[in-house]
Length: 481
Image (cartoon, rainbow, N blue to C red):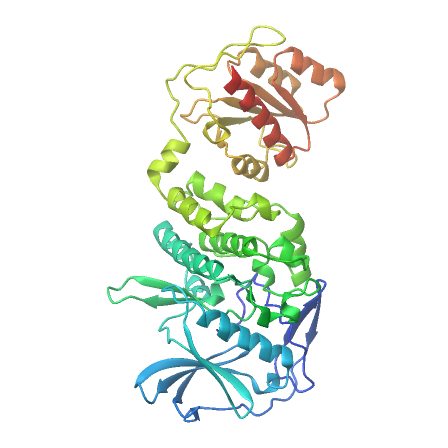
């Protein structure tokens, strides 16, 4: 939990706790994707403070942080003489049945888990009507704070460790029938092992869904209420649909994106703007400094799979995510996924209207081993083969490189803009299938390209998924030869 202001581009979290007349903090509430904000009002009693002993066992020693739900204190277990963390529900929320239910849910969900990458909850009680929970004390900052200290994205080795550890925590939760529903850097704590290595721990299960009859009746699990933090909400979560483990998988894609570019995949002026992008806008290309480490192809492919709009298009389980992460950061696996075809036999020649593409040693055995070389005429066009189009091609598993690369093409994409002559010239000497992308094409123009041997023709504006499907069809044809 953190009391720092939201990072630029972050949209504050939705809270489904109904605003009380005396509430002293801004409250973001959403139902059916409609948000409302209550302005600050005069503060109430701060509740238990430093020096107070809770339940006869936990002495509050120092206030650590304050968030939307409550305050966190460093405390001392008086019997065991060990430090702990105590989270106390804000006094102005103590009378809210929904707030109390959510607080109890956090305690119950976290107490069910015993995993090195989960912040363990050990006790739960009330003090003067205010619920509190006791958890292990993690000496460190949140992942969000850690990222805020970076001016450039962290090293890929650090990204790997963070993603694997957080994923293992989520795997443990899912194995216990718990969907977190609010995974984000603010809810991941950075601890340290005795050997100095970083230990990432997932916290704050207040929005978790439990496969538990005792959880019945909560608005947090109903299909007509939106719960979560907009920057990290899955499309189905944004639509207030029933969520499952795939929702957490989507949130991992958002976290991975932030680790790689220091911001979530989507940004907007309001929560509704961000929500609409999660539902309808393809993930944009990563924004990284020119001198940053290059992103492995398998990692970018996995990122886009995690951010798929439909749950069934994402990895089937957290175990599958972990296996894919291991491969994505493995140089040897990436080398196998992007073989060097330089010097291998070309795919064949085209000499008539229906050219015969002859299978060779360089022919792809699957989409994931097909190399697409993109060649452009001019400086590029906003409706042509843009970075977003290339991202869609890579999401299909293609290795996409620009003309001049050392890799030889399995299929060439020629972005001719309006230059029909240049496109025809490219076809004249082509030894691999060529897809022509151009603007203002009439039916006779399309026929001229086909007669010259084009494998396919795409009119502007070029749509990434449309072009990727055509390339997949051509790759399948090559594999059959």
